Length: 513
Image (cartoon, rainbow, N blue to C red; front, side, top):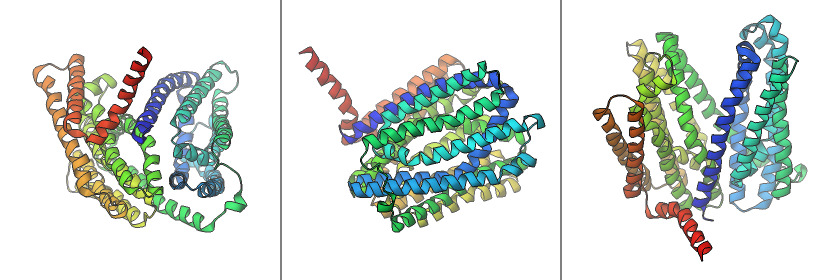
């Protein structure tokens, strides 16, 4: 099986997983909300939100673990893979302990002034908090096994486990319906058991299937490797924390000048953007280990080829769903929401534009991270993350309207960020700028133009309706596929896309004979 076919197959598994999980999650949320009630459901979410904010500290080590594991596997060095596995076990165990201590340390101020929880439900909320601390610790400890499966591109098993996890959550929801005990406590404790179950399953599976999963910490402990992982994690943390504070800072600036109504509009835009981005995220999860492993094997030519294709197709996936929504945004929001806050339509459109631009360099960022030396890249990205907050504040202070919330983000985060990422990919990975422009930027510009032209035709000829929305979606889809096949892909990409179809045709012919 070729690499391109494997990526498409793995992406398919992840999309099936996403579809099943969305359906199960929506039903589960409905049952849990009805069972717990709005107040207890809100307690669980606000306590979980506090945990998630602290758990953010561990995410940088997660990314480092996945990068170094995939890189070692790509190099084809089993001993190096064993070394990385054992080091990551120790580091994730330590970061898990540190995270637990931090969460315990902030518990007192959280429950004595920060969180607004009714006194009679404080005891139950604390049980939930302790349960989620256990859940967070187990999730962090599970990272090395998740990284190994990700590096081996075992998305089928990953998807099956994800669906199983969603079914466990559904089972817990039904338990809450029929239990006679405190439903919030039952829900919190049982939810904390899920990472223990998945950790046990993944541990047994990985130790049986993958030879690098052996415990020999004394033998494989390497201070130099530890130093490299921690350095990578530190610079990655700088980028991530600057991005987090920038996102929160922009919301605070918006609130200061325009109030909560525009915060609601921004929240809706971010939620819609999250739905759209998930389609691209699944493909990137399947593609990222391939790029890192190509770097590990020093096959920079293949890595750059997959990088350009990844940038193009990740943006295309968002364009496929976003452009018809952008054209029909007032109608789409009218179907979704009972009341549309002021500026929501424009915010949603600009948020999606920014995301499409950012995705045009997503795989190039993976290629940069694959090389490991990210100090100056991280510094530049962190400065660019901070810039929109300052620019937005200046714009609002000097009388700029709400549209200035997104203009700095599009220019700095989107266009500027892409330039920095691609420049570093060119410098560190040898990514040919001409190939990137010809293979990604120009095709995407042409495809977007054709989708917009054909998508606006129903708006000119028809009144606003569901039929018009459906026709817009059909025309933009047709324009995208025709443009993509005509000038949007090269011969290698066309051959890779046709490979599964050709195999299916040959298989049917063989069966008929």
